[in-house]
Length: 106
Image (cartoon, rainbow, N blue to C red):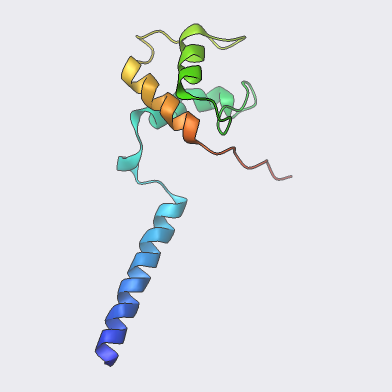
């Protein structure tokens, strides 16, 4: 009986460790091309106070795609040579599902 309890505890702790690890850091293989593009390109302005916050806005993917291809205010239009349609679609899907960032702590 002690052996079964020890195995159960080990399995539970392993599961908790796996869950805790994935809650704080995304698995690099699970990050899609859209999120990579966001982190590499979009975040430079949209997370630095240059452009508006675009995460957590609740826009449908089509809105992000139209804005990216057309440009808006100071944001340039992104051509297909800048971001291909498949990556843009993945980016739009990613952004439409994100939560708003936490307010900066003072």
